[in-house]
Length: 401
Image 1 (cartoon, rainbow, N blue to C red):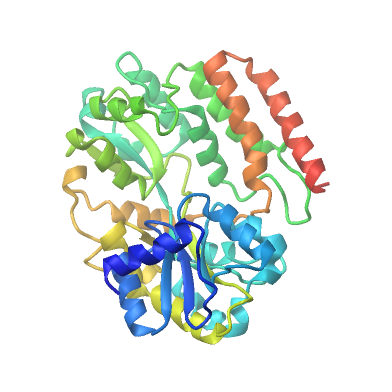
Image 2 (cartoon, helix red, strand yellow; image 1 turned 120 degrees about the horizontal axis):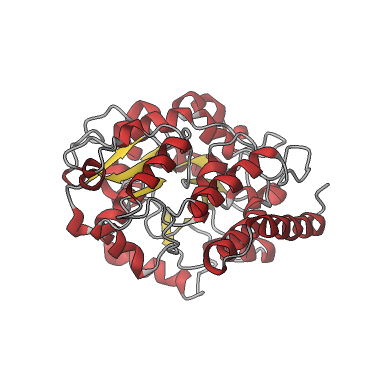
């Protein structure tokens, strides 16, 4: 399958004109979710496999088609931040354990494997990539202040360094980033396994207080993700650090190319975390689930995950690949550093956390209130109370205790 064929097939779904022809096997994916080279190889290896690139609103389109039982793919991508939203409808997917998934479990990161499984133990998602985090920092700026990026192992260390350089720069891009990363370092999120809302517990308050502290210390730039100001600030060194996932390296390279060579990567202050990464699942409408599982396990084998990193910087979920030379190349943008080593250590230490179907909706309440603190000067305690009220309403609406 050449690129023209791939894009033509992509257009069928993107325009909402997907065919009902069931003679082949369809695979839904978003742009950049899997290596195009690997998909082309898969289409040649498995005759009848048709990779289709679905455009915007991937989750909504998949949920709508599943609900309507129309134009449902045989194999589908499932984004890491979305997969728990599909757990209440897990019966719409094949339990991959019934196809022999457990025999491959040892090849994959344990926490990532667990993320694809419901609380009842049904596996609907097979691991694609991961998003282990690290501290991206400007060595040129840090060096002027005598700050060692690899020595900032705690949030206190990180914030203290931010105070040191705040007469020249802001250490933090925005409060939302601090809250997200602190929560990602926790073994508990906003709902526990029993279906109880725990967003008012100490671990959430800790993440909130960290974010608010960055505001009080005056080390927060208050720049919203994706705004033009962000790239300018990263390029000039006005914001000389960013805590983010491995895939953020590509964002830095494309958004701040003129800062090539100045950046380095160190472990995340406060501990390892994951932010992002995806899965492949098989819908119950697939007529050949065994063959679909063969496709998935070939696509997501260590060799293909290595190729995915080379082509798209998709960080593997197969730890045996971390030491492969294809991954361990010096990166000129990061001053010749082999940045994979930092992310590999993070990936091995990510805490296993239960993710309920409602995490994203509940987290929105905290993000919105932190934005009010950041942009409108809302008192943090008032914002915390309002975040709890918002989240509690959502929790009550979806039936949490």
